[in-house]
Length: 87
Image (cartoon, rainbow, N blue to C red):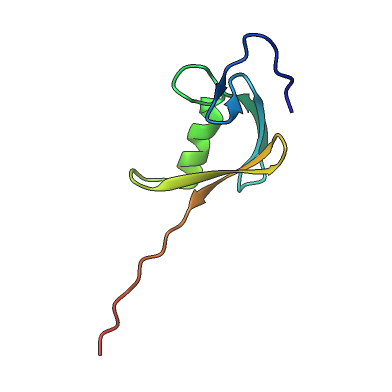
């Protein structure tokens, strides 16, 4: 857990500049940090590759879950639609 110092900014419970160790469904892991502008992660190339590999489309969601302090898992959120039965 990062140490809060004078000047740290907390946004939505996360510290701007905090390091995230992220694991992808492929098993690949990388480190990135939360940027102060736009609530974005710095390592956007790896995030873009995840979106391409998982075929994430407009309107679909992804889930970033904290497994242990500082260790995160990123995966595509799959929603199932109910199918009406035909009698």
